[in-house]
Image (cartoon, rainbow, N blue to C red; front, side):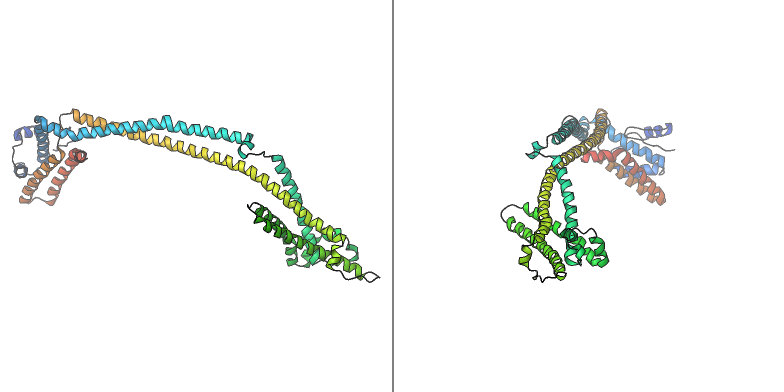
Length: 414
């Protein structure tokens, strides 16, 4: 037959156990260790008897506090303090939830709406944010012109480089047009060798790369960019002159070798006075310069449109961050609401304890139980009881303390 205690104020006893409690009567003011040894002997160390004695100590402790109003009030101090702390926490949590719901989340929603309106305004009036007019038509026209000029320069420089470095002219191919716009330059270059083809394909990118460098140098501020740009233009012009000289020289030499009259040797001075030489220069270098101006215009227009894209992207990022924070705040509200619910449960628990007369002093009661256990164990040892019985007695006391006292002791420590 066992006596089981569930909770702080729940006491279940059968009739025999109630009679046993009445028989033993109030706890006499003696050392609990001695009383534990005496009760263990009188009850023959029975588990049921141990439960009864624990309950007697517990009820006696509460009864003494109940009779002593001053001690009762002193014992309730930790619970009142805990209740005050819980009430203060409740106000803080409630205030935080209210602040998030009525201030932070509405602020973030207004911020999202403002960013969305600004995005619409940026798209409608981009010049308001850039200080000048942005023309998409100019950008697309520039892109089309730049595309065709790039194709032209690629064809021109690939053909001209093939004619200058690899092509063997015949009497049927003495025209300048055949020299600088050879439609079979790539296929002929491939027949001559793979490296020749690679050179023909890459030379146009040399000129395009020089043009890109000129554009990048123009973005620099100050006079230092002037000599850099001048040098690049000069290098491009010299390169064009070399190509033009090589092509016109080959054409001239073919004519000279097939002429019945003796013709003078082809020189640089002779080239400068040749119309074909300057025709090649204008067909290449001048178009290249035009390509550079168009490229600058295109990049400037793209930069303006890109600024608009960057502004819109920035506003979209603001919207994303605000939506992300709203989700975070909504999650925080859920967590705070759960915390508030637990807080209210603890408040109700503290109020129940304070309204109930059965207040205990956890440390004092726990000490009393262990003193009693010490005497009980001492008798069990003297009676040569098994280790299992000794361990069982300890477990019963520990379980009772954990279930009825330990949590209140922690409260008192706080």
